[in-house]
Amino acid sequence: MQLSVKDGAVGISAWTLADLRDNEEAMLDHIELPTDFALRLMELGFLPGHPVSAAHSAPGGDPRVFRVDGGEIALRRETARHIFLRKH
Image (cartoon, rainbow, N blue to C red; front, top):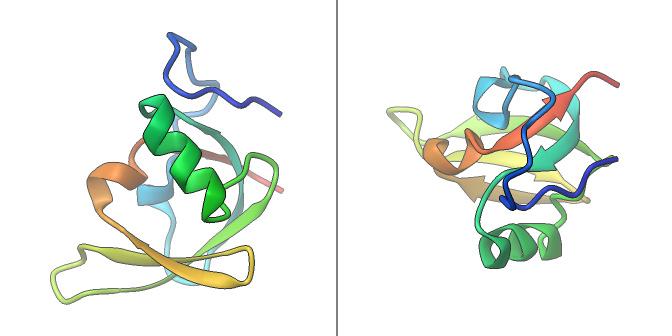
């Protein structure tokens, strides 16, 4: 489990939350965003090692809703591109 929060760490995976298809589930690997933003996402349930799935999206595809930690959180596609995933 890697808790990278944009401290120069290089991502292991190139598969991001933005690539997740509807109802597809994956394991969150790490987040590459500024520390304060990454910590806020972790408070909302985007924790490395935890499952996340794509739910639905607004017309036009952005923002998109993700199921995480028993809740649904909407994120912009640009933000989702910095949240990296791995298979279960």
